[in-house]
Image (tube, rainbow, N blue to C red; front, side):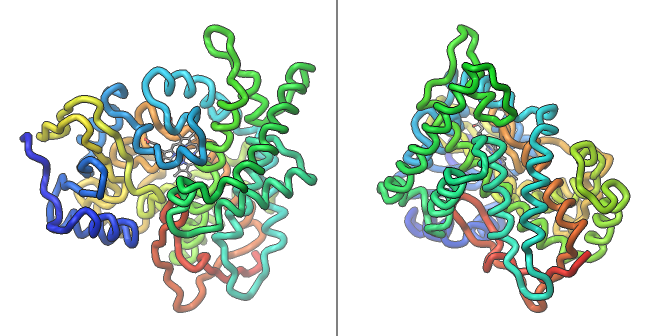
Length: 435
Ligand code: HEM
């Protein structure tokens, strides 16, 4: 078929407004009224065609990376992440950056970050108040920001740490509405230039340490030491752009998934009990050790089942650089094609009884990467996937050795849009009891 799939009879401005205001109801209504695939129209943008069947998800995510570009639709992050970010790149430049940026995040390296993650979680949890409503979302954001700063940027606690932390929080929390558009308008420039000054100083420090042969475990040290095939290191600009990318890509995503997981633990007491039993068996009274993490299979199932029902990024976008066939549709060059995690993860033909929360769906089974893909896929699969699972398991396991989260009576979160992700509203309050 050569025509585009159907779209709602609403102007592009109305469609954009509805998407921006309440993305999930908009997606659900399109899917219900139009079937699949459907087209979304946004002002000034090429038509966007949305798919959710795993066969088409595979065609999109595992399609020819020279045709299915992923960097174009990330362009809106440009004013923050910078031109040399892996996020914005495609083709050979993307392959080159991936080869340099991905290795610090491979499974075997996680052990080196585990102790720092646990230490940060432990300190934070010991300050959490018991017995009254407590907003878990900002609390886990603080943990995940500290994890990025210490394990990725390699900034040790001290003056620079506190300044960088408060500047990052200003960018992250200043606005709940389209911060990336605000960035495009230059509103974040003064804060960003202060962040840059600290990052360039850290890059210089890291280069000097590497030149002296000092070995460190943080990602910046590994990136400073990384060489391409011709032996060339990353430039300061490329290092800065990719550090900011890792902050943007790694902080809010992980924290928000943690907040949704705490929500699920409070909503399903039987799941909470099973997770606590597993943690007691594997970890005892703590502290969580790097070797424990792989044994926490049920907890991993809880996090995955949370990501199935609340994928914080509901769409994976690719922009066609040439005409391409997806399913039965012959789509013209420049069409934006989307694989929707949110819709795939709730398909009854893929996930029986899809609304039911059941972590066992992920325990002892291999799930198709095109039926469950909260971290995207193909050549753009999230660089930090193992890092994120590792961090989330350590934070939750360490927290549950100390506290038991309970629901705030009568509270049910709405799905809201924060800077880049879909998050629970009102800071996701819970009531903590001592474990
Ligand atoms: C629960 C936490 C996280 C989720 C759900 C998540 C999800 C995603 C998704 C959906 C993508 C796009 C994939 C695609 O287009 O196919 C992505 C890309 C990326 N993520 Fe994550 N992410 C998480 C945590 C992290 C962390 C902790 C880091 C690093 C510290 C990270 C770094 C990146 C980078 C660098 C990319 C760009 C990869 C590329 O374009 O080649 N992410 N992530």
